[in-house]
Image (cartoon, rainbow, N blue to C red; front, side, top):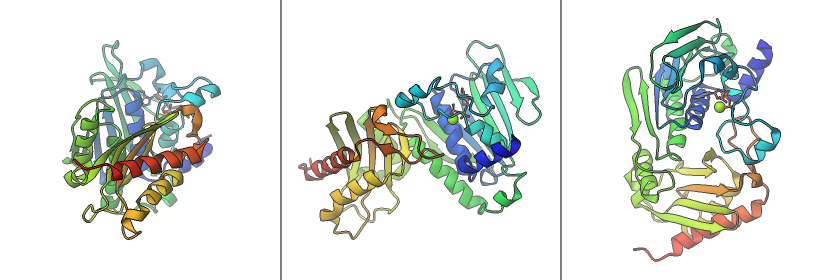
Length: 326
Ligand code: ADP
Ligand code: MG
């Protein structure tokens, strides 16, 4: 069983940033409004993710660590309408099989918090407010072959920050802070409600730089069961960074060929293929029309009607770029 978990872990946990992604997913699923990360050694020595979400009841701490234990869906049918980031119940079990994991949590109706050490099974009372802290120490300590593939602390830290950045760009309503070895590396304060264009622009400026917003236009489009919002970079955006292309499907960061191709083709005529366009695109679509369960890390999706999605994205960008600029 240990071996099975470790093999499964290989698909979900590649490096510290994969742990960060899964733990922040969980914090957001729990309704957190503030997520704070403390890292040591680029996340290899320690990743602690603290949230002020709903917490895990004492009696369910052990269940949460079990493989295929999820509180988020109860039947396969629910997969059609999954609205949470997690649903497979794999992450905590997988991470715990390749690290020293401690779960510390308190719900609103508990007088105290409880901490459970995954490896020893030791449960003890702890002090903290409502919410959850997951501590992951010594990642891959028992799988030296995997540990060897890790890069320098600075590189692993950069990947961790990028993982949080992807979440932050989708959740302007949540505050994020990242500490590395006692130093505050990034802090993005909550800046307004979800789905508020102003709040999104603020968050995009905080995370990607003021220029990303001043050199882009707000985008808004709907076509049948799908709606799009976000920002499309102006064709003449000066020295746009090549990697500033962010796509989200129902709030989840994705790397998707359909979306990327549609965006590239919309920019083809204006950029003449000389530069990469920059954009942040948020697609919301009926969950029944998209399969998010095609990749272990959920970074890829499959659309039921990819042509309709392609067309909508292309049109949205075309219209945005063609609109008279105020
Ligand atoms: P999944 O997210 O797919 O359900 P995970 O292994 O990531 O699976 O988490 C297992 C379960 O542990 C979740 O379904 C949830 O009930 C609980 N859990 C994990 N992290 C948190 C958290 N930060 N706050 C509240 N509950 C959590
Ligand atoms: Mg999860």
